[in-house]
Image (cartoon, rainbow, N blue to C red; front, side):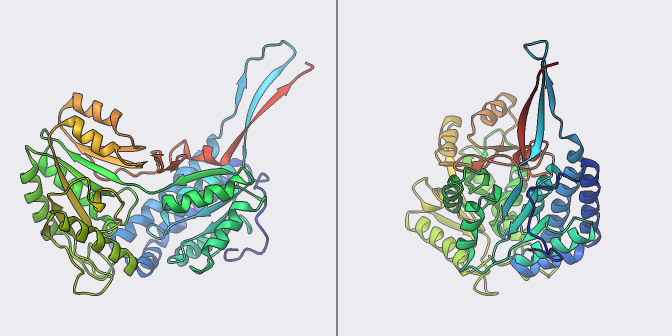
Length: 436
């Protein structure tokens, strides 16, 4: 269990009224902001993320506690007109119980608060299993939760080694005391957890892998598209679930986009130690991640792709990789069939709108998608046709606490953040009050 916790997680914190839960979540948010620099340095030390990005993550992370502190007071039930005059029909919303929270290494703070904020606001208790690469962020949040007055046994942390991860995940998914599983990670792991959770028919939320398309139409403002592409692709060195994995650029502006994108990469991106102020690209999480980027580049080049910039490991060390841009890319290459999760931008040239939509929707996942256009009719068509849970129109960064985060197809189940996020931790109970 987490720091200061001496009791096992209870089935909920129903003894606390919503205003008390709200106040404690708000205080937790304030403590995070007061300790922003220290929390950010932990993230950079754990996963190599540039300090400026880590600071941004803490602000983003804390915003979920602020948001759900307010939502805790808005868990409204309902009164339904009854069909018989001697009855009254009520709908109550109650916490599901203990929620197991399994989080990834790329956002070791934000992926916790986005889930835990909603769970605690609903009245649930949580058991957090952080990624084996980044347990310290979860424990630091636990310390601040204690300081905020979150009762012992409400926020619990179970760090474990890589060797024990599968066993701990199975226990959390199969133990009948756990009522809910919320997981962010790969689609492959999510499917395993779903199988485990099926045995006790647990509630599940899954935010799984992405393969985001970034479409630039001839009508686009190319300079804005380049700025959005840079932000969407290379944040956290390309290690985010919503970062662009495939660039689709219409033939009329293809060459201009590639030229400007390459210049922006060379000018604005700096590989280095995350604690160096000028660094925008830190190391990848481990050598296995680097090897996957290399594999995708080698496969693409062997099939005719051209390296415009980057393309190899950086001289700083084995886990550092140069931001890379490829052209002459086809849909047969691995980098357009699999999620790279690294600083690789493959560009596919297309002719027609229908062709771009077909390529974008060919994936079996659908988390985020982006496109740039200044044609109002086209904007409506593409926004509705893209098979993803989130669409950025002339925007490369779309995450915020008030908006529902999640995907379709094999990218997951449920939504996090927003007014919809708290529903993932609530059961709806129908009460028929008769004999009146």
